[in-house]
Image (cartoon, rainbow, N blue to C red; front, side, top):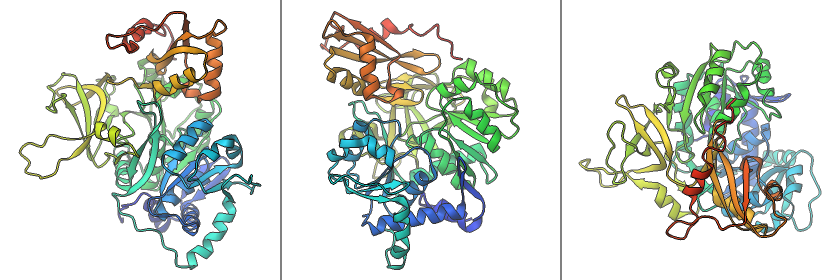
Amino acid sequence: MPMSHLVHESIVRQAMQAPQSPALTCGNDSWNYAELCSAMESFAQGLLKLGLQPGERVAIYLEKRLENVAAMFGAAAAGGVFVPVNPLLRQHQVAHILRDCDVRILVTSAERLAMLGGAIADCPALKTIIVTGPAIAAASTMPTVIAWANLLASAGAAATSGIRPHRRIDGDMAAILYTSGSTGRPKGVVLSHRNLVAGAASVASYLGNNADDRILSVLPLSFDYGLNQLTTAFEVGACAVLMNYLLPRDIPAAVAVHGITGLAAVPALWTQLARQAWPQVDTLRYITNSGGVMPQETLASLRRMLPATKVFLMYGLTEAFRSTYLPPEELDRRPDSIGRAIPNAEVLVLRPDGSPCAAGEPGELVHRGALVSLGYWNDAAQTAQRFRPLPRSGTGLPLPEIAVWSGDTVKMDEEGFLYFIGRADDMIKVSGYRISPAEIEEVILASGLTAEAAALGVPHPALGQAIVIVAKRAGKDVTPATLLQECRRCLPAYMLPSHIAVNEEDLPRNPNGKIDRKALQAEFAGLFENESPS
């Protein structure tokens, strides 16, 4: 079987070997590999006819649907870079992403385009918008709007006019995934073709994926863990079933209806799924967890309900796609472990000086290997902080190797199994999402309702962490309800606080005069301890 070097080549390979095999399903719509490959290549030709340049960014702001997948992999096939945008983001957050990486071409729906409204005017590089569904009338101030069907119809002329995709190698950019940064604004993690292909091959190998698998995709495709469901499926010729679920109870029903063999989710969703009445399912071969620690009660419930299903507990970070997994046979012996390094990766536990920690000694998790991303888009300072050389004494190699220093504190036992301890920075991790406190605080302070505010992450049995806001009111009428209303107006659901405390006094300060977040976290640490994880 020929090897894929570029991320879209797995689709081309499957289309050549098994063109009639199912590739994608979404609701009542399905594509086999021949149809997916045709849509991908037609979209790529359409982009080239629009003048797409090598490495130029193409943003996709859609819910999960067939066109979303064709656009992402089609942008890569043309020689561009795809930028999947979380469909939960608000207009100012979408506009920031479009501006930050100079997106010239945006793929979206008519409904989402209307929601973006005037934010489009703040994106000067944006020249063309491709809209799924029927053509719409564009405002005179808007970039050129093209219907998806019309773009694909024009691809035939492009294909016969000698327009060839830009030559790419596996070290070139393929995608930019935006994740919250410590400075408040989302930052773009730049992934190469090699990152995506190596990640898919590694995950498929330890999950034992094959062409008979049907993988249910419930996570956002803008999330590295969600995107990995597609790349893994296409690597082995499996079928990915796209799902925009309304209620958690819809997922077990979909598993039964579609004969799903693999399902990935984050701890908060698994906690909800553990409370559902699952139908009799004989096909579900494995489930996986990442984005935080799965509560033990949730894990036990799932294993009781799905006794024949293997459970893979995993750890990953967008900067390295996926780092560790715990083999299912180790669950009973070490259910609190995040496992060992995935194939084709090495995970180290290092002291601040770069020396290795002893067994049981806490240190920073450092990931080396083919999955280490290229860095942060347009952010040299953050890249230099997180992507740093490894000590290489005695190797004789002239150049250092760059690894990802995760910022997460772990320890390793004598057998090489890793255990998560905590984060070194102020980032909050809720249901697998990494959330910047500064981004939430910016919204609170911009409202004029508070004199100062701090957003904190505190332990929560179901979410991993929950968001707590502590604020000093700027007026008598300011209440937790008014602040929550402002958050709902400006922030996506996963960034909404679970608790808001409004005070008359200044927030506590540390000796440097900064807000004492550690003191506030200690004050609210037990707020959710009586919450049931299930």
